[in-house]
Image 1 (cartoon, rainbow, N blue to C red):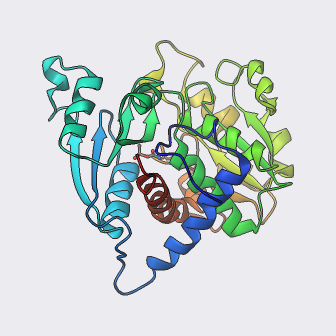
Image 2: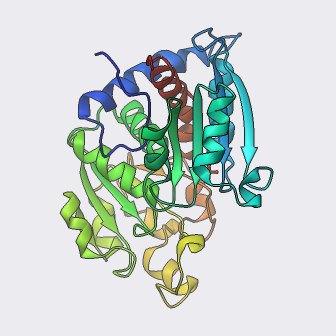
Length: 307
Ligand code: CP
């Protein structure tokens, strides 16, 4: 297929064919990571700026490594080290980065819609690295890549996404992509964090984890996003762990070949027990490794579109 998008702002707007095309492109880049010299000249001469207004470990490092492996030049900017702290608007900051001839701007921002706002206003490619509670498209893509790699398919699988769905950009990106590729999705958590309104996205909602675990092929655990919550959505962590935590005992309800996923950062002992996170069904670190190939694919595709 012919990739025509200069930006990746969300998976909501991507077709199933486009999602599959990114995953296929990532296959080629995954192989690059196994070579002794893990570098290709695909983006030589291009410049990528990582503008991270929110903290990140995995996504920021992964985008930087992905760009370096594609031979691009990379500059990292954090909120504290930028003129945003002096009152400059996001658009002015981005326009100044464009004036410095950046080809790709990778943006993490605490406001939903930040990447959507910039994309039509700049010639530079905008890649959304997570915007508030809206979308985290490369996380969704790497999650699908990992499922497809381990299970050989997405279509027909039953995936449970468990935890704080209301405030999760990872959940939204996963829901959009998984349903487009034919997976059945069940959202699990307290009714305050998993309201029935989510069923409008073509998924099932459950508030009883033990009913769901025995039938699923994949569980994707989510952290409680305290930084986005302005009030208490459940009585306490002890109550949450008792009702929704993937404890060692609860994990015994899963099929032996069920994948256990988590986008990170993990809160060990809250949404997932340490023994389960490090156990044989966990593919949490495979997700991180696959993120590199997926982000190389996204940068290669969006960075190669003529403006
Ligand atoms: N999964 C994820 O986005 O992790 P970081 O916040 O560390 O980038």
